[in-house]
Image (cartoon, rainbow, N blue to C red):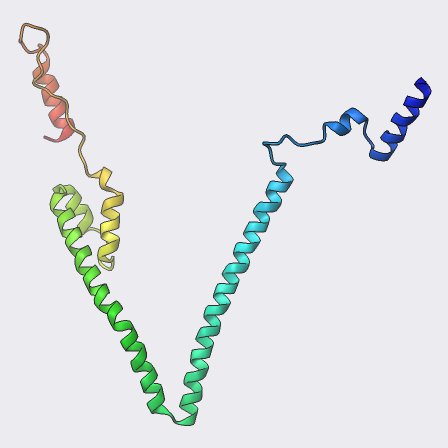
Length: 185
């Protein structure tokens, strides 16, 4: 009987290249994803993103080409009036956005002015040294991002007394001078 089971084992090893026990251990753990499968999905997602970007770019180019072709066709036919009407329609379409943009610019400028009023002189000098062509929104964003550079830490209470006697520590005046220098008070 031992010969019969050995023949079955060798047949299975020949077919799968593994022993029955090893064949059972090839199942991945349920909570773990094999790296090859993970990499495959990541590559697939990257490829889909690339294709989508190409698709969006192609659509934008096609719309632009169609507009240019229509304008060219109208110009060739001498229909300047139709072309002017198209341009006027586009201007009217953008007018609400222009008004809204002006309102946003005003709000952003007011926010920047309010923020500048709360800054220290050093911080104001840093903001003034920003490039001249920088937009109001970019300046406000820069101040907000770098706000931590301009805030001073709260100095410790240098008037604290030691113990119940109420007398200041012997070196408190030296410590106070050191802290004043450190915190530029």
